Length: 348
Image 1 (cartoon, rainbow, N blue to C red):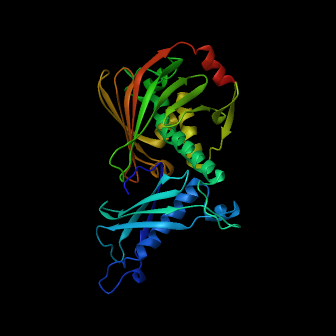
Image 2: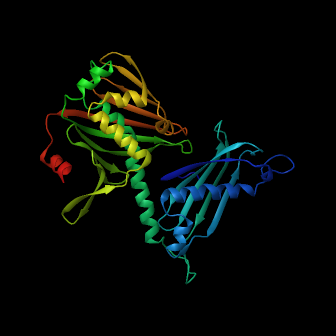
Image 3: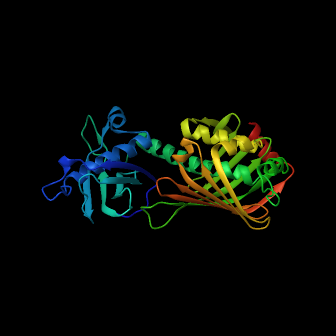
């Protein structure tokens, strides 16, 4: 019941009066309803909800339900219900964690298993339909891209140059124009409240002042992304031919991309508008704290901590919902020009 999830969604529910019994605690059967609400939110996030399942020709009945009650919920209590996707290729398994939304205290753990059933023949499928697998894989790719993108707003700000003397915004803006290319490896740890161990992703990055960013994810899946002034693209390979396909970039993602590119171009006004900054330390060992000002960024971040010396070494993002992300830059170096292969990736 505690397996790691590949995707998760948090849903808040305020316990209504009609869900409690004469002892003022939630009747045990109502927790299943809370799971259903969270499960629907997760399927919406995946982009393949119950209506889309039916339209694709399949029903998804629940065949197994496990619940472990830890502590009772009461009338008026605000619950956070986290639904985490665990399995999807042969069956749909979702793990749940219900906590107090304010204190984080654990109340209930649960899991459900669903299988695909052909709507016409009523036959159970031994493997999940291709349309559902494609939806999940697309959602995972989107998540793997968007989480690094949040961090890369700051990576674009700080990895482009040495911060040895950048202790005010004007000096920082001046230094953004110095190195033409910064590249290296990254390790990203995603710490989720519901999981005992972080989710890891690894890869390489190439940050070019006049071009944009190449974000080359190696694990848990191989996928290359390119971020430029025209938007975000994903590499697709057919045979020996590589093409870059545009990725929809709306709402928060568009705002993050805008901020990232503004910083790449040395626009300190965008940084001042969106964050309050506090810098401590000296040229060799420094710590920068960013607190978001804009409502959009406040929905994502609580605080961002950045540490480094000549170049950035560590970025920590504290998210509003209580999760956190740590990005470690390894073997970062600057160079005057791109390689031919890197230039080809940016220009095609």
